[in-house]
Length: 128
Image 1 (tube, one colour):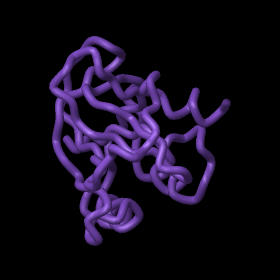
Image 2 (cartoon, rainbow, N blue to C red; image 1 turned 180 degrees about the vertical axis):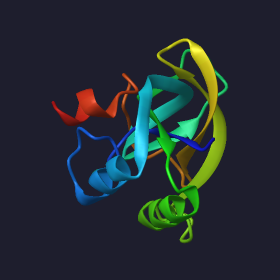
Image 3 (tube, rainbow, N blue to C red; image 1 turned 120 degrees about the vertical axis):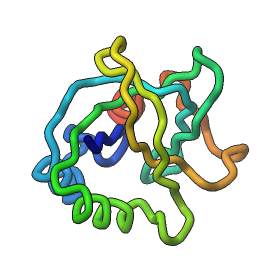
């Protein structure tokens, strides 16, 4: 199965053409988190992985339908070919309990000058 963890502009609550595309090409499995840190880049968030279990990025796990086509479109949107993000596999916790391996878009640039989102939740940060 191809699962994707979304934490930013691909979330259904952020209504834009790409979140609508993903909604049509996936099925929601549930909410969850992975161990990482979340930063505010301005128009979008950036997540990096973390070894600390106290660092969590919250979002939604979806099952990707037609992975070849869907990931081609999403990789283009996320700037994978330009090196802005990397699509990596990482463990996540579905419904805050079940461990599941997911793809996640990880920021591939320095974060020291970015503002940390301490809650790890882009929706609550975005809605402020």
